[in-house]
Amino acid sequence: GFGPPLRPRPPSAASGPTMARGRGENRPSAGAAAAAPAGGVLRELVTAVAADYRSTATKKTMMLDCFAIFAAATAVVQAVYCFLMGSFPFNSFLSGFFATLGMAVFTVALRLQITPSAASKTSLEQCFAEYALCCLLLFFAVVSFIG
Image (cartoon, rainbow, N blue to C red; front, side, top):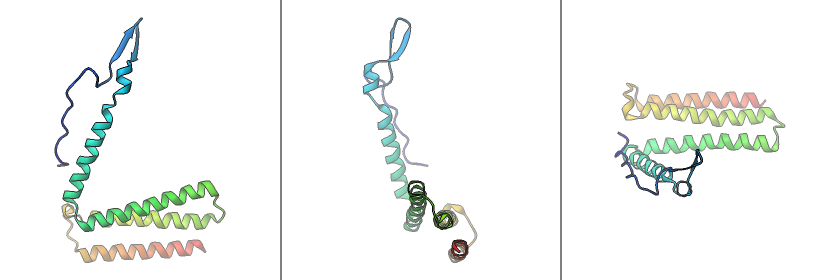
């Protein structure tokens, strides 16, 4: 599972969207606009998912997740920079973007292979060797594309 189930909130007069009816119109009342029960449910959900992740993930998995998020965030930053400042050497932008995005994809693939629930028959050494070879080929392609 994904942790303990969320408890439903008891209905009350102030929580939940109530409708004020007047002259045939349905519009949210002032009390419904002030109460935001979705924020509390979202906070509980995020807390439950984070607690489950911390309890089930190993240090290796957490490290790979952090690197994949960093690589994807770097690709996003490069794309935003290209959008804002221009892409004069466009092949340089594409090389950097594909390198960071490729590293993120290869890292997620490695994480999927070494996860204990994956039930793969390959050893950790073989998984890492494949990851290193794919990254090396990616970097050769990126360097040759830069020109």
